[in-house]
Length: 232
Image (cartoon, rainbow, N blue to C red; front, side):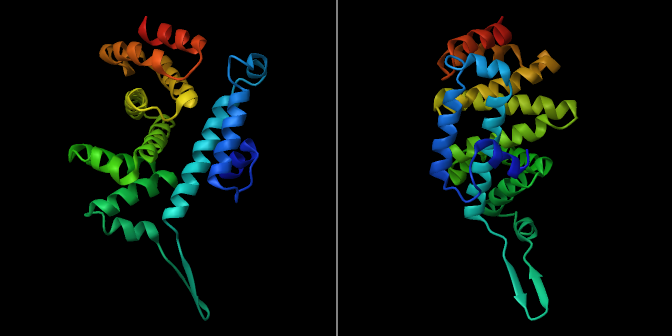
């Protein structure tokens, strides 16, 4: 989703502070909760999904922009443009720069490059280190973006990996709530992948979802729906 479109959906300006964006988003999403706005959702069934995607896109953009900036410097008639990605790429032998390259590539649409780095973190057993470097909540956001990027790829194998990482988000959300009522967006994406190929979820994972879903901060009607879909 284009950034300008995200701001339009949320009804905020690009210079709106993070805290205010979060407040506006929570107010909007609450007004469309299934238990209180069924008619509105039926009239516009994609509104919750659009709001959630717009919110995470804007928040991630602002978080990254506050940490890493690309500087332009002018010298007389010559213009020097600092290639931040090249700077990180040439230093990716160090964990600090690997982490920054991973997040930078996700933000700028290089999902497959981010996947390569994420799998490298996994092989080196550095996922916990990555979580600590990013902060657990930012790690949740970036894992969601990685899953989304893989889901949107045409490759069957990448869609299967997307399901794997969405399931990891289920595990994380069960152990420490972050998305709360907005977690329905993750389950909705899992549903789309499940309809493509039910084998994307193993029998063990489906049994674990039977334990997880009742604890998620979603409506009882959605809990019943997803329990029946994934676990029956």
